[in-house]
Amino acid sequence: MNGHLEAEEQQDQRPEQELTWSWGHRPRSALDRVKAMAPPPPLPLTPSTPLLHGEFGSYPARGPRFALTLTPQALHIQRLRPSDSAAYFCIYTYPRGRRGGRRRAARTFRADGAATYEENRAEAQRWATALTCLLRGLPLPGDGEITPDLLPRPPRLLLLVNPFGGRGLAWQWCKNHVLPMISEAGLSFNLIQTERHNHARELVQGLSLSEWDGIVTVSGDGLLYEVLNGLLERPDWEEAVKTPVGILPCGSGNALAGAVNQHGGFEPALGIDLLLNCSLLLCRGGSHPLDLLSVTLASGSRCFSFLSVAWGFVSDVDIQSERFRALGSARFTLGTVLGLATLHTYRGRLSYLPATVEPASPAPAHGLPRAKSELTLAPGPAPPVAHSPLHRSVSDLPLPLPQPALTSPGSPEPLPILSLNGGGPELAGDWGGAGDAPLSPDPLLPSPPGSPKAAQLSPITEGASEMPASSGLPPPTPDARVAISAGGPPDHLLPPLGAPLPPGWVTMEGDFVLILAISPSHLGADLVAAPHARFDDGLVHLCWVRGGISRAALLRLFLAMERGSHFSLGCPQLGYAAARAFRLEPLTPRGVLTVDGEQVEYGPLQAQVHPGLGTLLTGPSGCPGREP
Ligand code: ADP
Ligand code: MG
Image 1 (tube, helix red, strand yellow):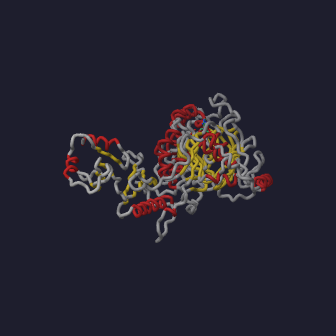
Image 2 (tube, helix red, strand yellow; image 1 turned 180 degrees about the vertical axis):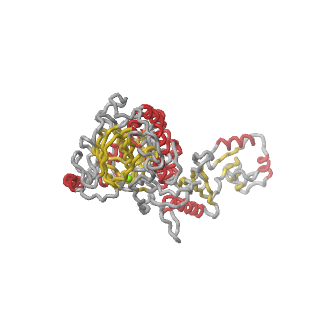
Image 3 (cartoon, protein in one colour; image 1 turned 90 degrees about the vertical axis):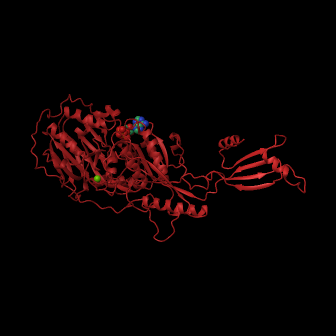
């Protein structure tokens, strides 16, 4: 009998269990004997009249409690729900392991100091709220009550995932690493997998932007390029481009994520470590103005760049290594080695408006842009809200995720609240709209931050002639992959392409191995091309390498760039200028030009910085050295 009872209890997992033993015309049990010995009742008993009722613990003592009801016919055994008045909260952390990689660790705490569930729940809520406020940089009242009302509604993110990003792992990484973290952090999200090139660009044009606190791309730099250009193509581009955008690195080129990682105070990282770092920063909230570069191409079309304009070695490697996409970021390493083997120089002219010069004579450009701005400044109607394209291509995930709720008594499911990264609570921006940390512009660095005098390298000019027709590079096709923005602010620093430049510009002509114009610090996740660059320094950082450099010296430059120390090598061919605008005129008839890693039409181009035009989700500014 006992064995049967236990089996029944194990099968039944309901919080309240009932088990009835009935007896009638069966062999007499001990209970029957008890009944038989009792004095006859004054009134006739119905079979269901309770004779006895009581609550009992079990033995050994840690077992459940039971309510027993004895009737003439049966013994009812009811397992009682534990009378647990505790509440719970959970802290998710991503500490670094011994090998440096992060691992998720969850700890659930049980608030059980008070007698009632309500009190314990309030205590758990206080802790969860206070921790969340500190992590997101939200103000806590000095002496007031800490209640969940202090938290604004959960931030809503639109995640755009390119399933082919990087080695095709973007979706898997997103599912396994990103989604758990952001839902545990209490952010809500909607996720769309892109279906084709320029899909993201079209999507953001039809979005009702007020519904989102951020648009986050989960891919390489290319997908964010689409998003920013899509925003600037909207009739309401001025508002639209302020939408905070974020990047979670799952591509082969993850330059901006490298810069975000550094800005967050983390050690340089690659792969999943970089992804986890950037996801942690995203969860903590905080944004930064982002400089955008408007690039006018030979055809007169314009696109917006957050990263780089490259010509020569950098763009050759970028485009040539496309075929090694399966290698992920290693494609650039292999591409660099191959590029060194077939090193070319290119003749060209680089002109720039130095950062130290106040933009003096913008007159030539004013006429055209004014007309344009009058056109675009008209408060155009917001894009249609009801016809959001989301429903068409929404992923199979629930949207948005249900928000975590406090647990109820007796069902001790943890309360998902937040992600910690082990850093201290010195926070800047926030997810709650309380504004960003004050910006502290760094001193401008108009000259290379290193002395070019130190080293004397022997320039070996093997193969450093002007680029031959048989370079092995793809022919300079007008590029079909990069569509062009029509909206956006006027370029008041630039005369029309082809017209003479205003006074104050510097021009140099010669043979170059590469010319690189970079906005943030990083050219790749592990390539710090402009170590002193900031997201909103209002500068474009021009770096060039003149012809005559040896392959060994060029390799040394790129190796040193991993730590951002290439300017201190003293390489005489390496040049640098901080600028607000530039013009690049290739004189070699064939070559590759890229904007943010995407090939564009080959020919003269010019560009100007639009300081802080965009908004980048960076997380709080870092406190280097604080990480465990
Ligand atoms: P990676 O760093 O791996 O190159 P990117 O984010 O730069 O990753 O994306 C590479 C290119 O893939 C971009 O030009 C983007 O427009 C394009 N793309 C985005 N979604 C898709 C898709 N579903 N199929 C094919 N190409 C896509
Ligand atoms: Mg800049």
